[in-house]
Image (cartoon, rainbow, N blue to C red; front, side, top):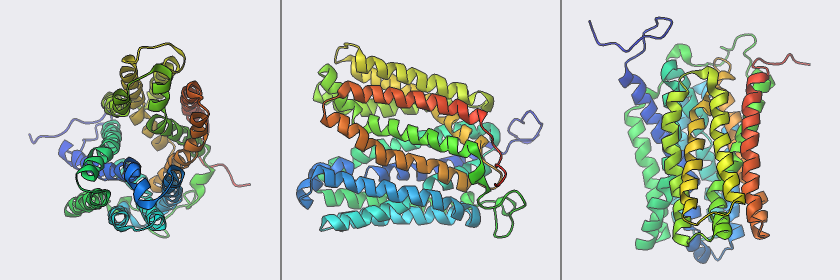
Length: 414
């Protein structure tokens, strides 16, 4: 008898593991580039400040440009994905990220950097609608939890790779060499995906073609689904959590607990590595979609308890990195179930549009949160930073359960 993957409960045979794994691996590689592109500039701010004669506020505004543009593109690109398929949109995004890297490297003024921040934002904006359309339509349902887990892990690795690659190159050569290397990396990944492009093509029957929409599946009907907007609110709060952890939490912990600078630098790396480990476990837990809300609540609930302890309790400095690791692991457990919540709210043939709108909440949150929490840092309210993080995590728990309660079908037009 030929080798065959195990069947689902409905006796429908699963495709070979190698087939699903190939799609998951290629999509994960693209997702790594997306997260990598989000940190192209921030690790190089000490060099760019002198080279461009810019303040940190001006350099931070480059990131605001990136995320605002990415937000708009992310919402719009979902429509392109549903109409033309994910593959051409993905290659366009990778090409633009690479172009932005080379453009940053060649920039001779602040405004040139700002222009290429727009290019980078456009490139970054396509990845989530593309990724989730490919995963949802090409990976078998019993393996989706693991697919989302691997997708989240590659995103965390992209964040970790950016400073690990760019800073040593900037020290050894220059910031221009570092950014040119970033552009080259994006184009190398694009070449790899091009060589494997047949695995990224959707079956004709699965693609949405112009005029193929059925009654009740009109282009904008999904915007009248309350669960979609609850998912958007969830990701808006999640972006705030990410922004606080990446930009302010380590320094706030240093000020509260006297953490040595060397340990402060390690806190974010430990958080990301442990988050990736949590996603591995979360992929197994997400095999039962009916418990997604409870897994999200447990993960972010534990993370909120850890954040509350860091913000209010007297702690030895050496305990802080370990607590960052615990917080990252707990948050990582919730990752795959978080993505399944969105999938359960997605109408047939609308993956690109729904994930585009929902994940645009990430960009909006990452554009807003630095303004709010940066003000707390400027005023020395370091405990307030941690309490704000706890509040955001509590909001994540509440919104996850509300996704389950609200309607998952379009409201009737007025």
